[in-house]
Length: 265
Length: 301
Image 1: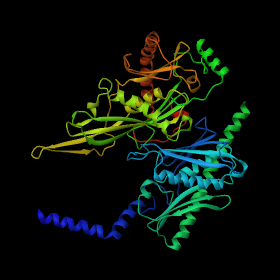
Image 2: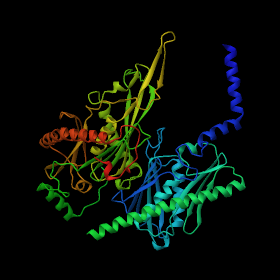
Image 3: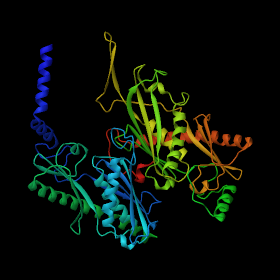
Image 4: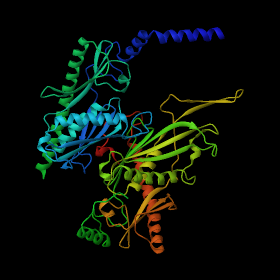
């Protein structure tokens, strides 16, 4: 009895120390031999992207976005006369979640470190994207509410805010699209979901303006080789372009339906 | 009560005149509710969830389960608590501490009816008597506010609890060591349901120039003098009552307001029950099929 338990202990210790083996096993599960990921996607395939405009009637522009399992609401209030006396519009962002948006219940829905970080970055991104000088001495409020989270919250927030701003009729330099790319088992997989995000693999988040080919923000919080980095950037750009085409299609479709409504009346 | 947009003197008169002639701003009579639209099982991460629209007020409720020890005072009862969260809701028009106080007031009322043994049987949340029980969180988030948050929250809570899937457990009791081990079943299709047939719904009755109306909108709130929120069971019995607003009421008014609430309570209860059944029938037999978007009109019943 005693000997068996000690052998068990040593074997587990061995497993823990040989991390390379563990990593291989963990990564092997994510991409099958045929090249499919856990949820049946190819490595360069995005999650299902669907959106609905005008969900909240009191907002100036609103958008409900479903990106894979991520469900969120974006609402735009403004531009309205703000307190600031600046020559350009001030943009504020308010990010909150529901307690049940993740499988482990969240105690705080608003104002914690993670949501403050997202607020700051969204604010910074859209300060660049919106033609702020068209609205002097005014303010634009962005309200974001995550109803169900699927790993990364930042990317769907950026995409939903773009769509809501377009819905509100606020002039933008260009669409703003954001996507992630990871490097697992020598393959570059785009648009990571929660399972893939939890792996200890290199991850890169890219936000671009697809028509102007400009990078708005780029973050990579892991060690990546220079050669892999370039490839990751390329596949992230491709993912953003794919995302852009689906966002553009959604906007055009919305425009068509609203124009048809006008014609009928 | 949240600060209401100040209606002008003429607008107030228009609203009051409409109420006096039994024809309110949106064409309702004084005893009518705005349309209730309901979609259940909307969020995969919660055990039970519900999106509810009461006119322009939109709330979302999610139920999550947590495993805890039973308390000393009530060894055969589980625990349940409701929270109302108004963060990220611009249309509430109150911010910071005031908003917290307002939502706290509603969650306190909801907790009151949940912890009343005549309304909700907490013994069904007990797993092992004296050892383990469920701690149920009912989290309600306000997505849009256009009056009458009390009633919307209680409807959403009842709808979400009635379709909550309680995770099934395997309890094994070791006779020798008298140790109790509890394992969660792996099969996702094995689940229990909660009994919420006795759970009351809130009916808010407001007094506007001597006339009692239910389900006031944001604009009607600006002429409301006093409001009483009743918790009414499906047989018309009143189990909870709380007054809100600055105005005073005499005893005669109080009686007729209670009469209104106990008349409308059973109607709203049965309406809600029908909606829950319809929404359950709409769901697929297995799994989550995300054919429609959450806020699509097709989703609601």
